[in-house]
Image (cartoon, rainbow, N blue to C red):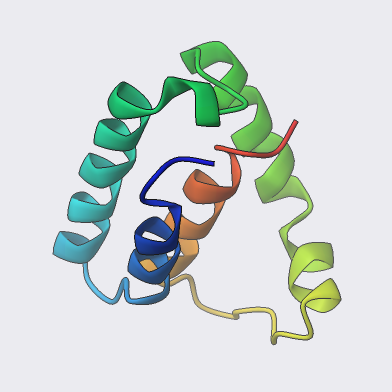
Length: 89
């Protein structure tokens, strides 16, 4: 895990707007630059592959977390798989 993982997690939970998502993506990029060893998927190819898998299984993930499956996408819904693809193999 990177030095700022707690901050990254709290940031994804507070994504409510397009600007929040933009800032979150910029923070993920900085985290990758500063702590590449804490990333499971450091290449674009690996990151996109995992992102596609996470999006495919999103309903199951939400059910397992005991959270309601969103009917309408939110800005946060875009950010959560981006963060998860940092760790997911």
